[in-house]
Amino acid sequence: MAKDTKTNAMRILEQKGIDFRVNLYSCEEFVDAIHIADMLGQEYENSFKTLVAVGKSGSHYVFVVPIAEELDLKKAARSVGEKAVELIHVKELFALTGYIRGGCTPIGMKKQFATVVDETAQLFDEIIISGGRIGAQILMDPMDLERVIPCKFEDITV
Image 1: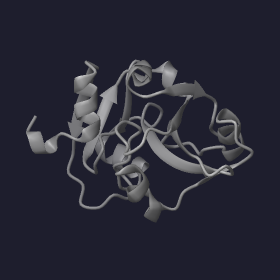
Image 2 (image 1 turned 120 degrees about the horizontal axis):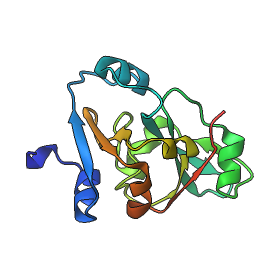
Image 3 (image 1 turned 90 degrees about the vertical axis):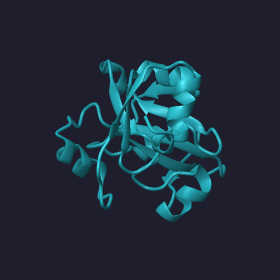
């Protein structure tokens, strides 16, 4: 893979010796993850999106959920010990994580936030997450996420 196509997330996975595959695709403008899955002929169930939220305490959290599902804010808050959480505004995403909408992945953010992955990820040998930029996906064993970032698996969808 050319050096300029590697993202921070991919470099981290390589450094940790994690097996993963990369899928690069052409995308003029990011619409949403379902549009990308449809365009690439991928299943929704094992394709995951990364959402960033802020709790009442002011702490930030990362939630990784199936692309066709909605984050349950009450379950999400409980999973991180907060009274409530709300999704951050998209314009805050880059400054906080170093990633843009459509390219946000839980691996390699500017700061490591507490991360909760929906428990359904454990049902698959391989999940698809953003590769760290628009037009790049990482396909990996969901259990390997725990080897790369501190995360836990819980029911966090509606």
